[in-house]
Amino acid sequence: MKKFVLLSLLLTFFSASAENKYSYLWGIQFPALITPDTPCCFDYDGDGVNDDGLGAALALMSELNENNYQQIADRILLDNEVVKAFHWHGLNLAQDNNNFTFQITDATINNPEVGFIQRYYGYADLTIDTALTHNLFSGELMNRKVTATAPMLTNFLRMEGPFGDDALTLYDVKFEADLVEDEGLCQGVCTEQELKDQTVVGSGKLGGVLPASEVFSAMNEQYRFCACAGVNPTQDLLTWEANDFAGSLIASCQQDVEASSCSQADYCSTLTHVCGYAPVLGLALDLDTDQDGINDAFSVGLRLGISGIDELNLLDLIFEDSFE
Image 1 (cartoon, rainbow, N blue to C red):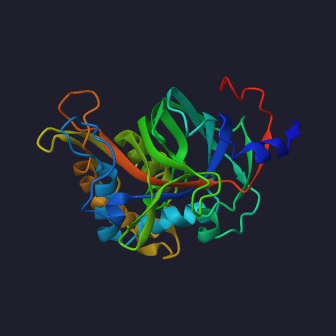
Image 2 (cartoon, rainbow, N blue to C red):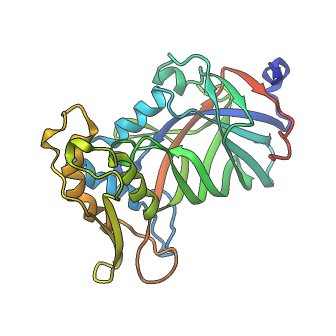
C-alpha cells in the first residue's frame, strides 16, 4: 500500500478556496444524560418534537445499574477504541453549496496519549485509510451550516456494558453542524462549541434510527457465554415479541439465570439486573418503522464535538473524489 504524506495539503488547509479538508471527532455526547431538559436532536416521528428514545433508555438504565454511559462514551474515545475523521469534500465555508458531501471514516491516531483538552484543541495526529469503514453523507452547506443525511452509519455508536463491545449500526441518519475554520482556538475545521451545565458540547448533531432487534441481539451475544450464571450458549437468552397493550416490542429473559457465582469483576455478574430491566427497555422504543402499530426502534440523538487535525497522513486516495 502506497503512502502519501500530504505536506501540500497542510500548507493549503487554511486557504479560502475549496479543498478536501479533514477534522477529528473529539466528543460523542448523549444530551439526555447531560441536559435532559433539552431534547435533542431530530424529529423522527413527525410530531414536531425532537426524539431520543435511546437517551431515555440510557437514563433509565443509569438509575437501575449505576452505569454512567456518558463516561463510558468518553473513555471509548480516549482509549481510541473509536477513532473517526470527517473528510469535508470541497469545503469552502465562504461559499454555499447545495450538493455538499462528506465522509465519516475510520482512522488511526498516531499520538494516542493525547488527552481530552489536546483533542478538543485539535492536536491529534491521524492516519486515514480510505479502504477502512466509511459512510458518505450528502446535503447542503448554507451560511457555514451543514445539513446532511446518510442511509446508515456503521462502526460509530458503542456503549459497551450490556450492549456488548461491537458498534451498533444507525439507519436513516441525519446530521447538522455549524462549522468554523481557524477562528479563536479552532485549528482547521471545527464545530462551534457550547457550554451546558459546565460541560463543553459540540454544536454537531447526529440522529439515527436504531432497530430494537440490533440492540437485543447485541445483548444476547454479550451474555451468551456466561456459564457462571447458568446460560446455555446454544439458546438465545433474550427473546422479544410485540405487545399490543404496550404498543411496543418487549424483551424478556427465557433462561433461568443466577449470577451470584460470577466474579464481580466479570460483566456476567450484571446478568440478573439485565433480565430485570430488559422488559423496561422495550417501553423506551419510540419509533414504529413498519407502521404496524408496534414500536420497534429507538430514535437516537447525539451531540458531536469536532476539531481540526494537527498532522495528517493519507493512504491510497485513488477513490477520494468518487467515494467508491
